[in-house]
Length: 333
Length: 209
Image (cartoon, rainbow over all chains, first blue to last red; front, side):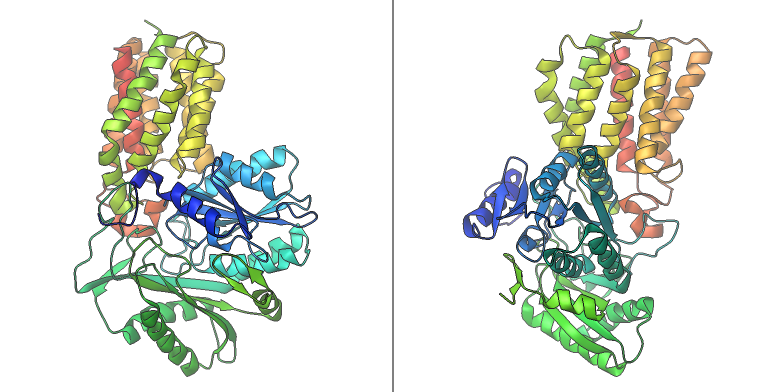
């Protein structure tokens, strides 16, 4: 294992210390509870927006804490969900009296831990609502799985819903918009290489020099199909078409197009993916109303990408464009 | 011979040792169908339990098990934290105030733990989870109780049934948990959660022997 670390045991803690040292004007890091909280939390009268999950997906979620996005993030161990005490500590820290909204990605561990934390918070009199993102079209939605995984749409949802919460909306309004964003977004990812969890020290899976994994998850968990490496144009077809079909996108509709890097793919390659995606969407007469290109929901050093398309309406665009000031996303300020 | 408070403490201590030794094995089982962290998480959780052990002496069995439960919930993470945490919390509730467990107590404890896991995880048998080791273990324990085999045999039978149940997860297609995302590709792999459940029961049987 070749990594820029001091020791496998201290990766998460030391990264949080680095964030605290560099962004004191935006965030505060509570190392004891292992949570990242916006510097001015709790904001009185505002719905507190909390997310979290395993570490290893940076900048998600800690990098999205700040004005106009998340009020707190609870990073677990790498690829392991946070624990209820930690989530509860985050919920207490951001409770400004208007309730707390949880953004949870659909993984059994995340759902169970957030659920236990919600029960504990409610017992303390904190009003709680939540959304479980499940946008990965690579997983068939059926009775035979734990449901689709939550991936790229989580980033878009955190921005849009965070913008709405910042405007002073109620918990009910926040929950309603979150539900709509999750319903209107779909994603699919692929990997060129595996990734190595520091505590494990060896790659989670092996991929041959001429192979790629289509439908990869964000934890190095294998996808559904392993195929021969292909040109970017073909790969983007393999990702975009299932998304477009699943979402039922029609000519004349508008989307937010999100081209995401898995952690080990340079921006120049992501823009080639973006080029192919734009070509496919143009061919179907679908308008790219907004876009995001970069590595925002990653899987350690995995090379590869994911595509997320979100069918947008005016309200979503308004809160996407709203000012945001976080370590990883900032505009309009 | 009933299970005493000392037996329970020995069980917890030895379980911590077993999870430490089997850390890489459990993690390797988790890699092809999960996210390669089960051994690491269980080891971390039970090491935290070990740290609390000195404060547990003199407590009743219910309080010990409840402390194990809350510690696992706070330190394991993943799905296993809430699931095993709930199991120990429920086991602690039905053994509250007790300093010895007879056959009926042990069965009640196992039943409470299993019910807790099923309720928290909304899982049933045949879904390639820890329930596939625990459900047959409880059935075997009940059968041994009816046949008046004694507590040591009862626990050995439970551990054997858990092992068989664990092995039976190999040909199963997962429909719960992260392995379910793989569809048919989850077939052919032993479930890590069923394996850690077997290890827990095997260690309990060894302590009672």
